[in-house]
Image (cartoon, rainbow, N blue to C red; front, side, top):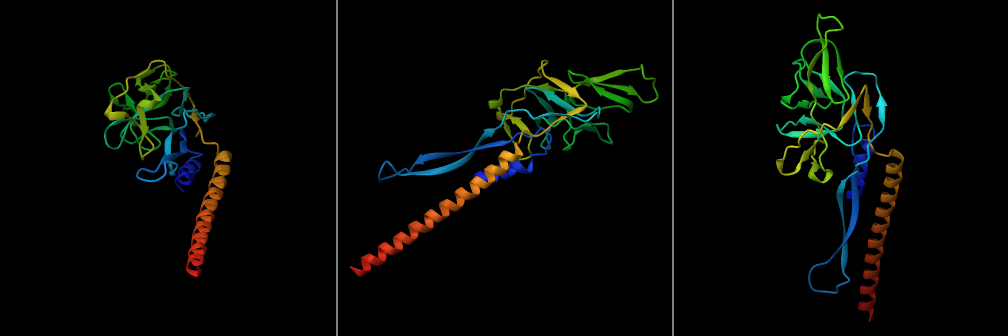
Amino acid sequence: MRAQTANNHNLANASTTGFRADLSAFQTRAVVGSGFASRAYATNATTGWDQNTGSALATGRPLDIALQGPGWIAVQTRDGVEGYTRAGDLRVDANGLLMTGAGHPVMSGDGPMTIPDFQSISIAVDGTVSIVPLGQSADTVADIGRIKLVNPDPKSITRGEDGIFRAREGAVVEPDVNVRVTSGALESSNVNAAAAMVNMIELSRHFEMQVKAMRTAEENAASSAQLLRMT
């Protein structure tokens, strides 16, 4: 059931921009206490997340960005700490803040990035945001700042319940100048929907098999008890 929960969560996010699939695995553990050393039970746990990147899908929208290879976009989470995401569906809110589609402010090196009124906007390969200010000619380009792009060790970050990754123990990841983005594109989820559907069916059958095995064991125990009463 736990494996099915993780698999269904992945399947539900097969169309979520920049989503990373959860990995789930079963483990055999020895029963602690007196008795035979061969006694064991199974546990299931999420063992991490799939580090493979999704496909870059062209949108033509200037505020959409897809990361090229490893890397993350730094954002401010709702609890005020720095988090990291691959979802590059950016927008500018009514207050001029550059936000992700999920409503998280995008960070620059100096904090959340604010965008003045503009006629047009573009994001360079290194994350630099440039605009043509409102009322200015097309050759008047102003650099607003650079989106904070990071590339931490995957083992040093963990995913929160809100889907945003955070550095362990409250650490802050330093910017990485080698991270590059593609403007006018979004990264798809890395969930293989067909594989997730097959896995869902297999897990359902495994669950049914275990229930039948327990039912058979109960019937055998009842039959054995009946035979003992007869003797």
